[in-house]
Length: 204
Image (cartoon, rainbow, N blue to C red; front, side):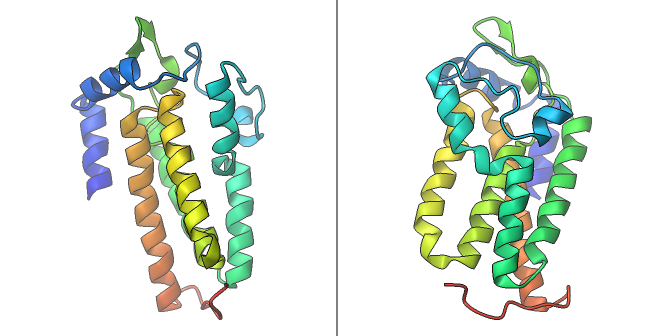
């Protein structure tokens, strides 16, 4: 599986060269290096958020739907519209997998202009990329007319995660790969009726 393969490459340091190059050349909107967010900062939207420089502020707002609590509420809303618990189930499972890897996988240090980016030491996979992708897919399933807008937002969000220095490119790819598995699982569960409920309408 691509997700597991990338995890191995990141842990072994094989992908570190790419991440270091991207950190030096592809984070033009990034502010000063910061530490990894605390538990409270992860759970409370925009708690102690950085608003400077302006690129970081823009990234904070655009990626806000991928925040833990907000993303869960949005997925809950889509699930209510679809009358199925599938999206809630895969959100919970995917976030659990993300947390396991975030607390067990440590990559070699990443530097930008000589400064150690401590917050990226244990940032694989990107939870924001993961949750943004699941939110976009769930909302698109519930409201198909929003698919184009959601697609544009998702691309913008994941690009800003890199440009603003929130995550390395392998973090973002890892989050998207995990999201792909989660979305496929949600669609598969919907078709199988395994959780006891099926989607009852088009949701348009």
